[in-house]
Image (cartoon, rainbow, N blue to C red; front, side, top):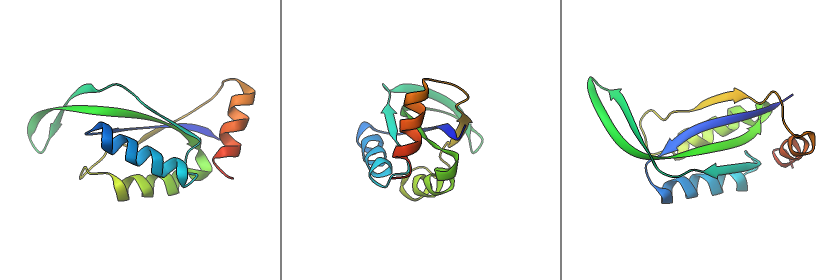
Length: 105
């Protein structure tokens, strides 16, 4: 199965919506969910940081991942954005077929 879930976080609702719209318009993702804001606590450049972020759940295919990653890096406001992908190993077959079709056409 070629489907993957890509995770990233954006600093605002507006930046999350802008990136999500661009990725779907460019057929790099079939569907993106923008989740409610969350608090992230992390180490960055020797300091403990705290930020409000908007998580994105990006559904796409492994074949589209390289182009998707480049698009995120190009548009993301962070110096080092979180970009993680995990395989989707199961799910409703009709949905997974749709996901694959929408990421290529």
